[in-house]
Every structure is written in structure tokens, then in C-alpha cells.
Amino acid sequence: MQYAQDYDERNPVHCRAGFPAGSPGDDYSWATQVMPYAKNDQMFLCPSVSWMNRTRLCGGYGYNMDKCDWVSMGTVLYPASTIIISETVNNKWIGDWPTIDQVVTGLASRHNEGANNVFVDGHAKWMSYQVLASPSNYTIYWTGATAQ
Image (cartoon, rainbow, N blue to C red; front, side, top):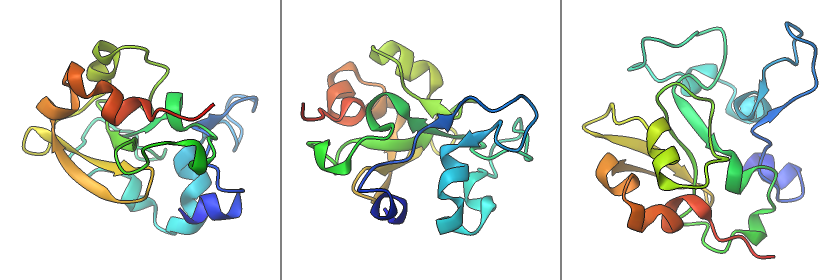
């Protein structure tokens, strides 16, 4: 929310490409962009994830790049039900996925068969994997129905 206030009510970009491989900007992810507001990189590293490379951010959390990437918050019609960040299997983003089957592939269920999620309006909530992966909930939680 603080990031958006400083950037004309826009959400961060999932990652910024165009940096040479190995340069400091090579992994300029959404987490790196909001770090000045968080001031603690531990919040981006899920302690339940053992596979992650702890030198990079987003360890276990993914960003809804398809529907929230650099989107003006005012254009998201349902900010209280649109997920912007969720726990993932091994990705830095959730998105560019046109079907629920592709969303389900990246979702994690490591916390009591569910995941912690952050919504566009800023609130966070644990939800069961079954609810998140349900085809009937795809448009509710993942598409955001942005205004044209």
C-alpha cells in the first residue's frame, strides 16, 4: 500500500527485466521494489520452505503478475477479493496463467493444506488450497476484473 501511494496508486511490477545477467538489477523483483517499505527481508522468506536460495527475495511467495502488474489500484474492481501475493511452490510470481489449471500448478499448500495470501486492498488471509484451486473461484480470487 505504501509503495502504491508513492507510485500514483500503482502496484509494483513483478520484476524489471533488461538488466545484464549477474548485475545488481538482474533480480529486481516485486519484493526488491517494496523492500524500502518493509525494511526486513525475512518477511519475504517463508521459514517452511527449504529449497529456496536465501540470497534472493520472494522465497516461497508469488506475485499475481497477470492481473496486478503495474496496475492502478483504482482499476481493480474487487480489491478485497483479488489476490496480489500468495504462497508458491518455487516461483516468484503467479500469473500470465490464463486458466485455473496453471494457477494450481504454482500454488503451495504447506500450511495446514492452505496458503497465506495478500489481497490488493492490503489485508492478508489464510485460505485452504481447495478453495484457492477451485475452478469456480478462479475469477473471484485471481483475475481481479480490472476496468477498461
